Length: 609
Ligand code: M6R
Image (tube, rainbow, N blue to C red; front, side, top):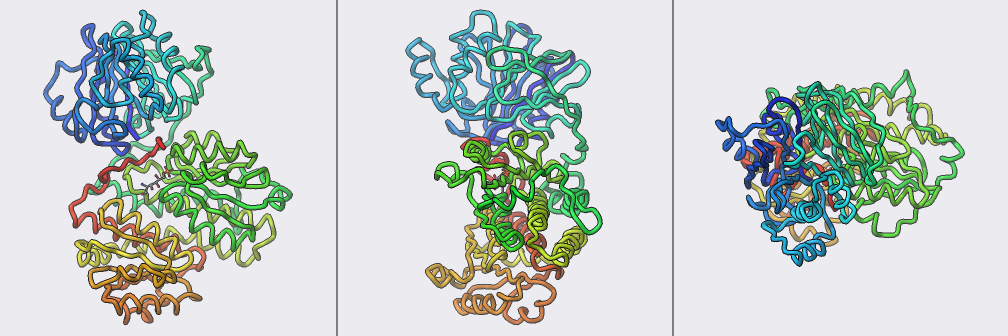
């Protein structure tokens, strides 16, 4: 939810800190700040607002430079987004500065204890408690102080710490929030996520749970929270620097929408061999699969919507019950999960707090866990029994597009793999769906070529304040994603509704000021959808139909606008129908002048509950 960077080396750390924070602004952007060690002192610049405010302040400030520094971009949890609440926070003794990503759950008790000891607090944050706690325990050994302090903290914390008495050390701490070390010759770095490091290095080390790193310009050492030396594992990342740049695009979101054919190709093609699939790293025996009582898919936000679609096709292809849960609900509802339950966690970041907690709860109850994750080595990936990576590349825009599409494609592959192992799918169906998956990149290209048409439709409706997405079966699940995209970036109130459910109450909201986006791609439900659309049209709503080429002529007369997608194997159509929904949201938000890549109140990676 916040972005952390740090740097220690022989040169000036400040340019890296700024540029690293720029790459992490997707994690939070309501305030930012930098602390450096210079001339025996800690110096801090921090301000409310986007990072550009700090950049402007430091533009011609050649004096604000140092080899050691930390930086932060914030998504406020405790305390409003103000200059004072912005990180870094500095200890009362003036010697320790730190940045924090996470939440300290027992901060009120700690604050009261510290106040009794005479510590004064400037901010409303939970983070300032950590630094004052360190100040209260500091007797000249910063490593010991960090170890003693973190023992008293409850909650999640990734920390970057500098101490004026130890100008040769940058300290990093990780518990339940991500943190990565990047290494290069004569300079080392910390960051919350890989894109911040790409311009400097491709060699990283992910801190594992409850680890402390002592970093200097030559290298680093890892310790557990007790202070025992731990082994370090370096990984080389193959993401290009370009992957985290906007290039010719106005927004990351549009760039990422346009990258979907490539992302799906990279995710799907290596798992297809001739007419069948290969998922080498999945060791699920036929006996285990036969004994499964159910499959639980657990995720948040758009990843949950992928699960909503997957429930339909998995039950169809596997013939076992599939439950879908929001991770934040699953973890607190005493789920009926045991060793005969297969849990699938879907997450782009691999760090979403609720999804991670759901994973841990599932494992505690005895289930095996497969995760579908984009970020290699992330917490969810490392803690799962099996991980299937989506190869979307770094996704920067807060609104997910290419990660969603690759997750969905991978869920088809997983469903086919299990269905085939259980002999529940005919060869013909199996091969046809594989063929449809192979054709996805080409079919998505065709839809993207028509993006101007969707832009002109958006121009007609961008000022509407009420939009309903209606559909049945998988189309309804695609509606959920379409509606979330629109809400998230254009701030229009919209709802996704199962078309058959409208007349049980919600249709009373439909009037001439409503846009209804109706998704109708399935043959057996076409006539039902036509009736539902006639019902809302009769109440004055404007209709945008999304259908396949096959039904274009049939649906045109009852639409105000119609968009068609290529016909493919029906089960796989959601992978195509979501694309116009993404474009519609993008252009609507653009016409409304919204901050598309950084929508208000949001952060990309939700690492707090
Ligand atoms: O990183 P995750 O896939 O676990 O994130 C889950 C949701 O926070 C995420 O999909 C969110 O809903 C997106 N911003 C929607 O565009």
